[in-house]
Length: 398
Ligand SMILES: Cc1ncc(COP(=O)(O)O)c(C=O)c1O
Image (cartoon, rainbow, N blue to C red):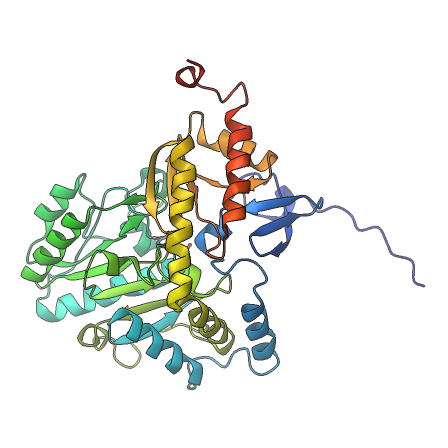
C-alpha cells in the first residue's frame, strides 16, 4: 500500500478573490433538500444554491442525464447543430407562448443578451430608441449591462461609468413617466428576489405593459429567479397575465448545471441575424440534456400543484412566526427581529440554511421537492432561534 502524503491545508485567502467574503461552512455533498458540510454536519437547505437546485441535490433524473450525456458528447459549440436545443426550445416556446429561444450560460448573460436585443430592435424603429429602464429595487446581474439596470449603489460603486442611456427611476410611478418614444425596453422581475422577495403589483405591471406598447418599447421579464416552477407556475408572468416581448431564464433551468436562455417573440428575436450575438458554451449538449430532464419533471401539472400547496404550508409556518411575509410558491421573504446576517448564522447553527436579503430581511427558497415534514423541521429550527434570549424582541416578551 502506498503511503498517503499529508496535504498542506490551502487557505482561501491565499488563493481566491475576496469578493465572497468569509465562508463559515464548506459543502461537500447534497441529497434532496439536505446539504452536508466537510465536518459531516447536515443542513436543511432553504437556499437551494440561490433558487437554483429546484429538484434538490443529486436528483436521479439530473444525475442520469449528466452521466448519459457525459458518456456521449459534452460540447461541440454552436458551430454545429445540437438536436436537444430544438426539443428544449420547443418546450420553452410552448410553455411561454413566445416564439424563439437563444441559449447562454447564466442569468446575467441572459439579461445582457436581452438588453442588446432590445437596443437592436429599438434602433431599427428610430436611431435614438436606446433607453433602457429598470425598477427601483431591481437586480439583474453583475456584468456591465445587467449592472447598469441594477440600481444598487453598493453594487455599482467603483465600476462607473456604466452603460449610457439607462434610467432607474425612484418609484414605480416615475417608471411609467420615464417611458417615451426613445425607450427601447423596460426590464422587470415579477417578484424581486435579491431585492427582498417583493412582488411587483400586478396592476402596475399591466399599466407598464400598456405604456410600453404605446411607445413601441419592449417588456423584458427577468425570470432568472422566478422561472421554471419556483412560484408554482412554470413562469411567474403567467400569474400576472403579462405578455413579455423577451423573457430571461437561468437558475432553475439547469438545477445547478450553468445554463441560461433568452426567449423572445419571433419578430424581436429576428433582429439577431447571423453573427450578431453568440456564445461558445451556450446550449451545449450537456446543459441541454439536463434542461430536458428538469423540464420533464417541472412541467408536470402535479409537480406545480405540489409547489403551490407546499408554498401555502410554508407561508403559514412563516406567518405564525414572522412579519411582512411576502412571495409566492416556494419563494418567500420575511422580516426577522434581529440583524438578518446574524439570524442566518444562528439558523446555520441550528441546522438550516437561509439567505439575508436586507438588513432585517431573510429569504427562503427551498428545493421545490420539499415536503410537509421538511417544513415542520424548518419551523422547529425557527422556533429554536426565536427562543434565544438575543433574538427575543421586547414585543415578544410582553
Ligand atoms: C432576477 C435575477 N436576474 C439575474 C440574476 C443574475 O444571475 P446570475 O447570477 O446567474 O448571473 C439573478 C441572480 O440572483 C437574479 O435573481
